Length: 608
Image (cartoon, rainbow, N blue to C red; front, side, top):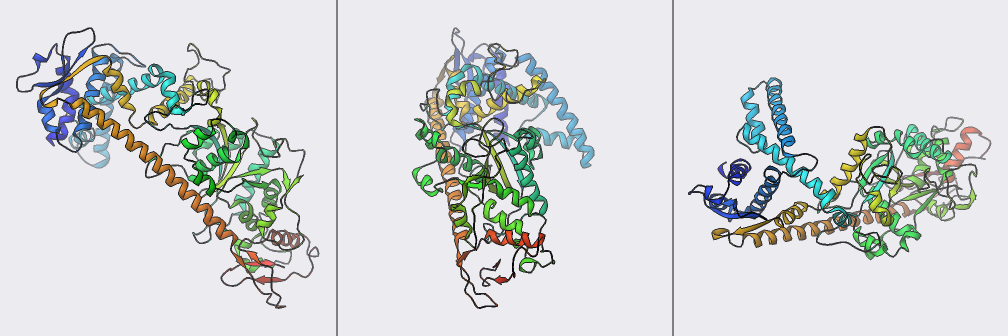
């Protein structure tokens, strides 16, 4: 316990020693072996004493402890002695910390009542959770925690200004790379709508999924609402079935920051948009900065080769039919298709053909392909009647016939394990010339703020300044968070304001800390590259498996006539759904219906 508590004595005792006028004030049994001298001053102030150095020297995390404590002393000196003021000054931070301690005491009292324990037991638990010994230590903990946050925000927003932001973005306004010691975040601002649909078992997930009547109708309703322009994307997103619905589908800033354990967002959502923006968008692909952007997003030549050559075009008519067939489960004589197999309900035949896809698709104002006989759904996709407009009166389709939002952004769809995502890229990496404006953190009332600027802060207009502040803070947090060694930037900056001396046992410690930080940066870059590559590998292999599963072919024999059926895939031909719907509405529309079963291996039926 003594070693772990030494890290906290630096917060209290060490700062007290630091505040004294000179090294000579450090007691004789605690010799200062690392000091700093502020520029313009002659006094030497303690950074490390020999007892603290000996406690951590040679331990597995010793160098990181030394680095942490030196950074801590330098930050606290700026606030306590130099009067540093960012969004809060030292006196304001002290008051805030005092209130935090008061709240922790109240929490200890509540915990004692709820848990049937004593106040002392719960208070001790709170102290141990912060690694401090007493109330004074807890207050100092809160003071430094807030001081560090305030300085981090100032450093990201003021001191480094465009320099750090360009590193975060990865490109300057001219489209040139700004990558330095760490990988850039390559940010995208995304909006989306989620319609939840459960995924089938692993063995059937790509070709035998199902949607409920309600889900089918909701998918149609969302797309019809967007296509008719009755509501904006933001208004429509209020029906989204995830937490972003409260923000009108605004997901915020999505970055490529990864690790060896992968991302928190599903691959179809994030990587699908990267693929669409970088590979399928011809205008973007021709941009001179395309190579830099693709590299930053992990899109190597191998990844590009593993992705489908073209984005899927889903006809708007397919959504119309999905809604129209939603409640059809039997024909007019109450005959069940395939003996009542849910996967063979007309809505699910449509679902599996067009929507149960884990690669991105766009929605085209087109009719589906014409056919007169059974055909493989893939062949029907290839023969999409793209030149035949389904409904010319719909206002939300662009010149290429693709569904767009009210701003003209193409709406991209993809299926993940959660359902169908309808996504919009509000700000692409290819808009790098606008980044300085788009990711500006100035607030209404501040000098230089432009209320008419297209920006992340202005994205949602509000009468409450707190809403703008929340979005500005989101930018700052993303800028601070993309570099896992961000604090090293503070360390280097604060070192320029003082002269640090390491002597005796600590001689050479400064170089060891520099080496440690460099290794941390390289390790983080390795995790970033490895994690991103693993995400792409997992995603592209899933797409390959999806294609193999959907393209597997079967030949069956008519149980009545003995006639061999056409060679078909596991996907049921769309004609089956269309004919069955006709039978439901008009039994005479289709002559002599005969139901034929696939082999047991295929386990599918079709209408012939």
